[in-house]
Image 1 (cartoon, rainbow over the protein chains, first blue to last red):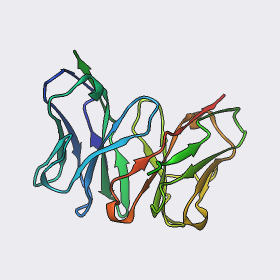
Image 2 (tube, chains in turn orange, purple):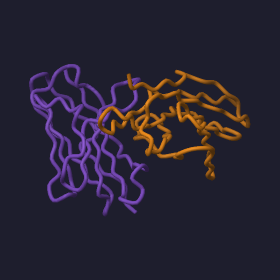
Image 3 (cartoon, each protein chain N blue to C red):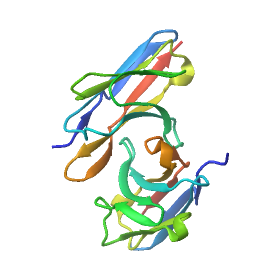
Length: 111
Length: 114
């Protein structure tokens, strides 16, 4: 069964590092894992994508183990403006390439 | 660079009525997606176009939903007749050929079916 699993919610304080993990099985071997951020009443916004190991950009890092059954989004030194819902997006190999968003993790950053 | 445009932003209809949503992707983006996002859930892909051809419409309820992308640019998603469970935000996204996994989303259309 193609399914992603994310924690429903997480709480953090400003300046801390936050790690959000998405578990996924049977993802397509040649597809990227992508993470998005969504604020209320807006469409999701691309954060980062990776295929394997570690990827880093100016706002986040993405860790993907060799078996690609999970991925971890790392947000360094979060601020209040990082309060949002975070989604992983993967492509499952179910005979067709099935693009599937996770259920989302609501991150609340406190001062 | 202009973003993905969607209209209307909000729509309220009664069940069994029809409704249409419009999307204008980022100029030059070959791939266009329509998603349905029910409150508290992640977006669910309804249909994906590559230029004006359909790549995946496996989760589109074809008995009531239809979508087209004329000339490989703008797209329209229609629901006819609407059901109460169609109440959701309908998101349009586009991606360029060389960054197929980086999707740019519009603001969405919030549909309420009463």
